[in-house]
Structure formats: C-alpha cells, structure tokens
Image 1 (spheres, rainbow, N blue to C red):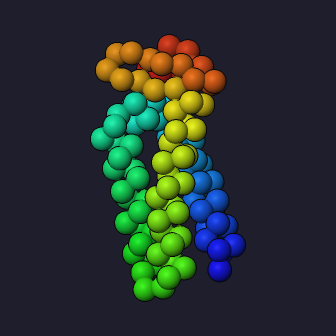
Image 2: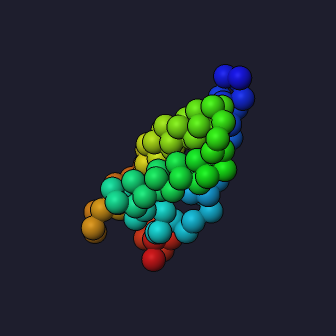
Length: 102
C-alpha cells in the first residue's frame, strides 16, 4: 500500500517538474518568484489529485503526498532556475541571458 503512495508521489514530482520546464523562462521565473502563484500551484495539484482519488484511503494519502511533493518540487525548481520578483532576478544553477528573459 505505501509503495503505491510513494510511487504516485514520485510520479507527481516528475510531472510537475516537466510542466515547469515546458513554460517559457520568463513566465517560469515570474511564477516561481510569486508566492500567490506557487501557492495556487500547490492547491491546484492537491485538488486535482483529490478529485481523481477521492473515496479510497490510498488515494487520499496519495493526494496529500502529492501536495507535499509539490512543495518540494517548487523549492527545487526555485533553486535550479531562480526567481523574478518585481524587477529583481535571482539566479539559480541555470542562468538565463537578457535575450531569453524578454
């Protein structure tokens, strides 16, 4: 039972990270720099997973783990890509040029 929950949590991390990687760098950095946008992402992932898995104990545990893994995924993405808050660009491990951020 717990292995299914952990596997689903790992799949959610991969899915959310791939979705973040698909967004243009400028939009991605603005989303990662906005508390409201990151909180909205967490809530959306929780609600979607609860809607999919409602009614079973494993499903509810998986939805909660998806929420917790969403917190972890956004934290890692902020450290990897960086953030933009207002006009301040905080670099991450991957750095973008001015042309990429236009």
